[in-house]
Amino acid sequence: MKQYMRQILKLALGFLVMSSALTFVLFSIGKLRVNTEHSELLDRSYSNALRARTLFLITPTVNRYGQLAHITRLANTLRQVENLHWIVIEDGNATNPNVEAQLNRSKTKYTYLFAETNRTTLLKGRGVEQRNLAIDYIRSLKPKDGLVYFADDDNSFDLELFDVLRRTKYCGVIPVGLLAQLPFEDIDVVDDKVVGFFTIFGFDRKYQIDMAGFVVHVSAFYKDPVPKFYRTVMGGRLESDFLAQVVNDPSELEPIARDYDRVLAWHTKSENREAWTVDRIKSLYPDKWKRARKLIV
Ligand code: UDP
Ligand code: MN
Image 1 (cartoon, protein in one colour):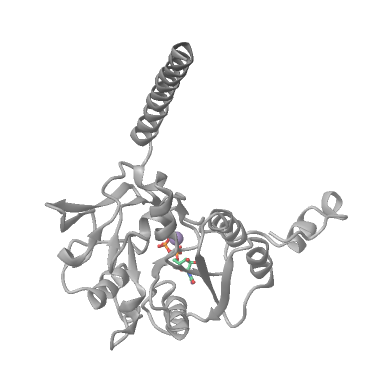
Image 2: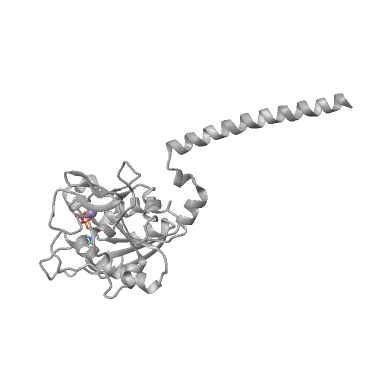
């Protein structure tokens, strides 16, 4: 009997040693993971709750050099994002079937509308009518929660951006990369409060932030008057004028990406040029191009 007891004791001791060793190994791996990545993103329940918040992305687009390439690149990013509603607005009097085909292939939830830019004024703000139509569309859906982000068709985005945007309570702000010769714009924060902006132009703007640098809760669009973009606003001031309708002071802005030491959104630019038509190329190089197809590009 005594021998039997000793055997059990031995087994229990062995089990204890083995399981504490295993716990130690797992704990070390866990610590390593937490140290090398954002612990918040590893916390599955936290990110699941975060990702339950709908993200509305507003993208004006226009038939110009590289449009399909830009839409395709953006679609390839957005197809990896959960709980996203992509609102694309074509600048014109109709939608573009080639753009629509690409939106369809992306398998993302999207709405494709059109609105024509008013070109009768000297004020050349881009995407004004398109973003305003998207705002009206979101209002018509009457969402209680959700965030609205303005993603121009030629910008580039890190996948982690879409988790970061969802941290926003009312109006979040983030740094933006590549604004002409400026490598990035950033938010000046003291004691967790926004006190200013790091940029090199438009110092007279109250909110010195690019279109890709802020995100707004849907509740802002139930205000009266509804925050909108105005063609009457001078160039480069669309964002500041818009944010002034959303918040009362820069200190109300939430710097949501302070734990990131890298940019998550880039203001990459489309090339300002015109592609030749295939007919023109055929007339210039008739022998070489006589059997050439007209590919969608
Ligand atoms: N855009 C538009 N109509 C235009 C020019 C631009 O709808 O006539 C769209 C464009 O597709 C982009 C946004 O408005 O999503 C901003 O335009 P752009 O990228 O040319 O501006 P920038 O890069 O200079 O800020
Ligand atoms: Mn652009």
